[in-house]
Length: 227
Ligand SMILES: Nc1ncnc2c1ncn2[C@@H]1O[C@H](COP(=O)(O)OP(=O)(O)O)[C@@H](O)[C@H]1O
Ligand SMILES: [Mg+2]
Image 1 (cartoon, helix red, strand yellow):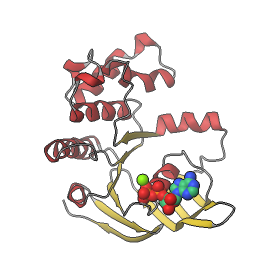
Image 2: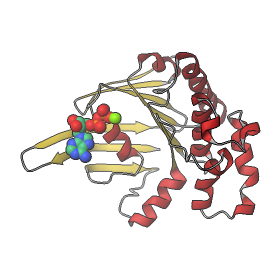
Image 3: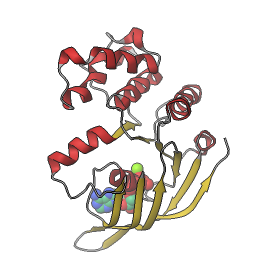
Image 4: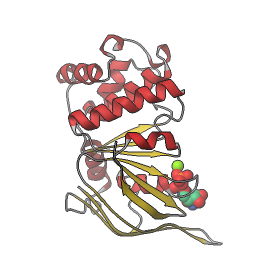
């Protein structure tokens, strides 16, 4: 599904050039659940911004289903992003003044759905994450774990080809983290969701089917895991 071929990326300032991604070669198949591990500053966010079609300033080739999508215009690229990838962040990034329902509905509206066409999809997504009864609540009325479930429902609403989760349990206690990881594993195993999970927490690795370790912008380890 995803092929990164000889990817190099540099941040250039007047004083220096920082080589942030160093000859990255990566193939991701549908249905994988990959942990990307590395210390702070190793290039994880840079890598997933590139994978998520946010950043297109790099050298090398990014093929998605055999095609380079990055030559398109900005408008077209945000449309591709909206339909291809779902994002889950550490801090949930929900809109506080919107209800749970409205938060999950928003990417559908961006995608061209009318208000009257969204109800079934939104409620299905909320059921999937076990929160159908919270549709009318606001994010602040929910626990951290429930808010992350809403964020996962939102990430899935456009049926993306893959999910990027950047430290999805970073703001949660151990028990809630396990809950969220089990939900992600269910989505992966039962629905075949392809998940790329960025973390520095080794406890999340056993939930995944593959581990990629990065140091100083280079992949130093890439291995299949039994789970
Ligand atoms: N916009 C930027 N301009 C210059 N340097 C950056 C920028 N973003 C990140 N960096 C640098 O690139 C390196 C990798 O950063 P990042 O991808 O955020 O690492 P991680 O997510 O693993 O903590 C770090 O040294 C960081 O300081
Ligand atoms: Mg980061």
